[in-house]
Image (cartoon, rainbow over all chains, first blue to last red; front, side, top):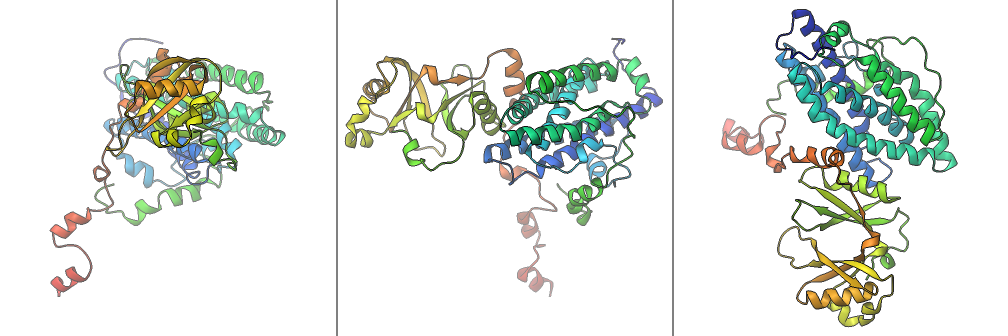
Length: 260
Length: 196
């Protein structure tokens, strides 16, 4: 990876970076919505507040990505979030699955937070300063998210027989989808070679090591085999469309709203 | 007087009093409480609930069962509180001085060496005779956030960038009702009469 500062992006690089920023934002937006579905329903008030905090942080990260995308020629962040349908969203299937039980939500959040924290940490060394700045800001929150969700996964896995069963069931269902977080977008290799984006394979290796140590060594859970090939981010489950319908309903009912 | 006797039917996890320090030279203040299953969970939960916006540099949590509190009125009617038994050692002393602000806290004001919580309370009363309430708990009952740079960065630094904003700062869909009223655009009887 080169360390020369990137001051000018070629058109190809700009297009690839726009796509990457959209992909990152889409994961944040959809996961934040799933987390937000717990508001008023979490096991205890404190966790209700905590998960709402986490959801707001993830939405904030989406805002950072989409604002940068806008400066690179992308659309207004609100248009991107509220006016694209399921065919145009590029989030992983990992984040669009229904919220499930508390174990499912915590295991998913743990798999996601660890991936995001490691990616952001690497992105703080981006040769493209605007991205490095975003990463430096977001990685701090993400490291705290990891502590929160790692703590929960541990207590659920080592708690009662029921909580252990639910946690293992969640991991078994989610694990194959988590690999999708490490699929590169079109043109990503060139950005990685220029030091603009982190090396996704290296992040994946660090992530596998980190989550294996926690889930297997510390929590006694079993990792299922991940399928070797995964459909791309343009393939969604039937769960995404109703999520977007609800999430976008207010914006679409008030297309001429002047202030949000 | 501990709270537990009033909450004997409480089926929740133990309650922990949360003490937040806003800046390095400020006292820790009791800002509220959380329910949590164990010390690390209490700290993480306290961070989520109490450090999203205002600045902080340190959090302590203390289980309610380890805290002894009293008002002057309670001491007058229950003087035996000053004999509350417990371990000898270093005790933190907190005092509540005023009810005048909208948010008033118990400020931790220092430590005393005591034979037990009752003795610590007696010393608190003697050190701070003119306050609304005293609180004491042993140093051994305190769980604290780490002071390493990583913890400070991820637990406390993000809140510093998030300015607390008054409610009216936040946008509404369309225009604010006051603005519409001033412009004579407020829908309803008055507007329709004007329009008629």
